[in-house]
Image 1 (tube, one colour):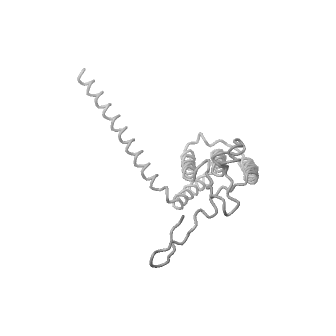
Image 2: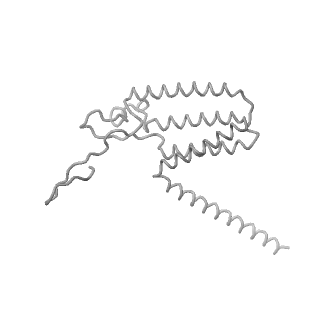
Image 3: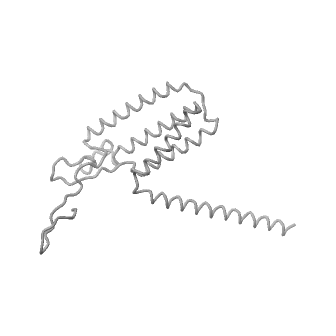
Length: 203
């Protein structure tokens, strides 16, 4: 009996170790492909649009889970604000606004200062995609299908979106920054060879 119990314990330990190894390998593989997708912004966002379309079709076909969609919309709005906001808010740190704030150069002689987001593009994309996937999975559990009058939620979300974006735009105008890296980040200059003149290079 003792040997049988030891065998069961050993078997359970082996199964747990195998499960832990499988989880580690799966996590490593997921991170590998996630890292490889980093430079392919267009492809990533196209995939996210497909996931969003699948979720929208799911909600429209079953005519429910509006509270899940509302919560998803609030979360996406919060992510958008982080994506459009500078890493250092000049309203909270006046010294940053005076010295290293997010303002773009106003003269050709000014040094180029790229806009640094509070929420980088890759994290912004990943959070949105994960949110849509989680919301899609939630539509298969009736406990999340709370009966609500969806037009009220839609109107409230639109009002919240307009007010939030208005405040964000006023913040951009007040502190003179644009949440995109526009402008001339480098300039090309001629390099003179000993035998011939040719132009290349980016300083």
